[in-house]
Length: 201
Image (cartoon, rainbow, N blue to C red; front, side, top):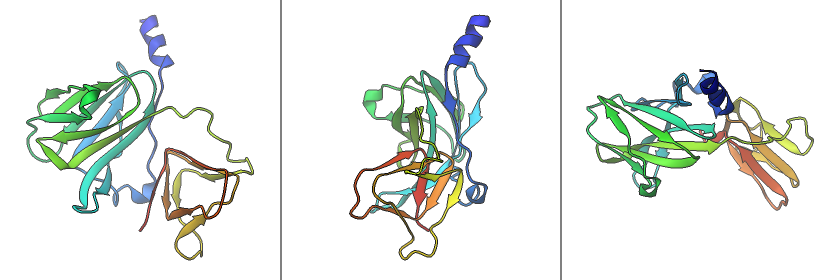
């Protein structure tokens, strides 16, 4: 038991909270998704409602998290009966275990996946499984534009933009949502990193 506990603690899994102001407005309830280190406690992931494909404007679910070594995901289909599951890309070689209206599969490396249920390619589940971000920049660094947890909106700037100057690292925390654009105009030495997301109202 001591060995198993030690192995569990050596692994890392990071799930980011979602800003309270978007919890209901940005949620897609097609799926319920949880993640855990094998043998650990299940953690809920937030299922973002995302529009993809300029032609179809299909609504899909998207979840994201950071990990190293290995994790298990559990996905429940909330609407309809689960008959079959396809996880792409095919080269990932992932075969889920179906249990009633839910299924479980494992990941042993960071990757981006499309999960298609009952042959539905337009309203699928996007899984963004990232590597643990090592050595994130300090928010106190004068050359860092830091977007911490919460919703960020530009001030009174035309075009709803955040202007990024040269020689700047933009860090977007995994629990941050930027409502606007990052404008890099005639600049150099700019780096944008982090696990957060952006959107335009």
